[in-house]
Image 1 (cartoon, rainbow, N blue to C red):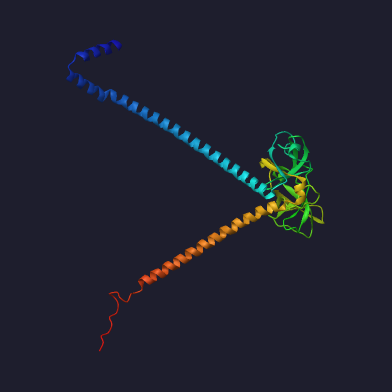
Image 2 (tube, rainbow, N blue to C red):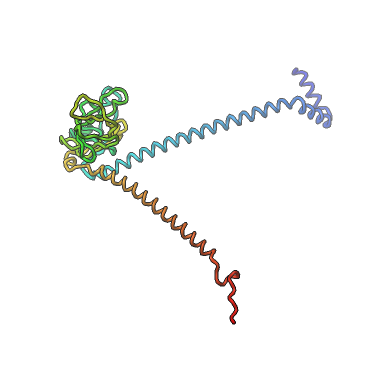
Length: 317
């Protein structure tokens, strides 16, 4: 086949140009057609693969940017709320980074990045923008260890936000998902709490200041005590989500910090009220504009005395 191809090529070189063109055209119309089709399909497939890879890279980059944007937005919101709590407290607190471990018992404690050098003392309350996290157990020079509310020894005197119901909050210590809930015990039997009621610290005992959000009521749980009620609470803060916290110093706790969270609640209410007022103003403005347009249209339809359609005056006698 090689010798035949060489002989044919030599013969093609000596043929007249017109005959060579005719033979080349015949070959292109017969032998080369399927080969060209195969090459075209291969090229289309290659472009499709390249386009798919490019689209996958673009989609992956968009997903990555969206994930980073969402995490950045959450981080900004968390830091904004922390700054808002600091502005409400004004003084007497120490911000700290919470270091969460993965060892045995780390569900009950957290290590903080501040210690005695920053003015942190044992039995100081640890709070977050959402509410109570725990209490300082021991301190070192530059770090400290705090117990959080799932700890079996956690206790806090609590009351309803309006101050009508009092009790003591314990960790629930249940099985499964209920293990990460709280219990409000010792509520007078004559006092009933509705689901969604906010429970705050009562300030009794000298450890936790009054007014720190602890959780919200989920439902009443049955007990053997006939003189008191117990309620299951949803915690205000999940310790695993608390990355930055504040340690309230004892001298600040004595002054009271309930106004810090009350300020946040009032600002939220003011935001809702202002939004409602702006909607009401917009609705009133739209109604007034529609009324003016209606009056203008009626005025335009009213015939004018000097128009051509005006009634002619009767002739004077």
